[in-house]
Image: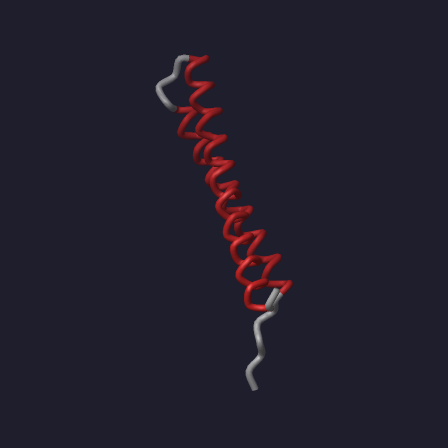
Length: 79
């Protein structure tokens, strides 16, 4: 396998990881919020709260991933 092909698969795996990392907590927040709204009988307050929590969690994880990748591949210093 060539180095360019390896890099392509590495980028594809990273893109898939980012997609799952963003979708999972948001979708989980929506499901949990709707469930609690149905159980308690409120008009969407839990849906809103847990969707916001899921979104914040997704972006925090995205930020952590970006920081890890930055440590793995520091920027080139120009002279």
